[in-house]
Image (cartoon, rainbow, N blue to C red; front, top):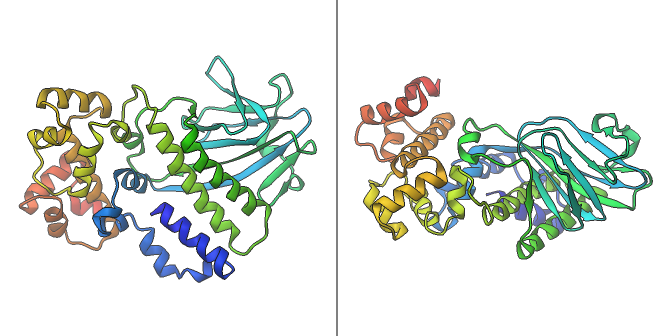
Length: 342
């Protein structure tokens, strides 16, 4: 969905002068709906897209810094994920509570998901300028220039998540997520170059293009992170496990199927005991509990959208009766489906 919208907007932008007025509000509301993937052909469905959809990311900031001289910037605590990419030059990143700073060089990209205060600096010995104290005159087209610029160009932004189950879906993330895979970083560089051009240009619709490029960057960054997730725990990390990813894909493609531990273990190509142990260690929940909770998250989205009756939602998710669906929903969410909808 996010990538598709970005491509559509880019085509409008480059072919017909590109502005959001060419994309009717009614169409945007459909393709941005959390159920869009689930109503598309199965070839378009993938678990990472669905998980991001449930996180409900929205870009509160997307821009950059063109830095020169003795620069040092202080950033306060934040909700959600901040990301930065060094387009040229280098800088130090120091995160509060982390003993060692990290040197970021040209081409490096980092995610900061834990919300701690942090600094970006040419030299950590320089006095830091709080980001909120930058002057309006420092900014032009979404990029702030300090000290004459030319030493370091950094692009980035901030994603907040309005979904109710962000911690469950994202799991435990480190203070700094540094992305290293060179092949995948080529895609990030393309997106960053497009963002730089949009931020410094004046073409119609550039604001919306930047917002959607930022979403594209989030997807690309999470892909890179999943490819090197290590021993961390959370639903998201099952997508980076070669044995568990096909299981998650099957459950997301058919959430209402009568899934059992033996059926799921067969998809993974593992014995039931080894599969259950591995699934629990990676996601933090048992396979059967994952199926249940995924169904209930989908149920919450369907109830919020209000397009289906309670009976239709229960049937879609594999429940033979309204009472069975209601009991499962209340056990996981803590209230009856009807009350949640109200």
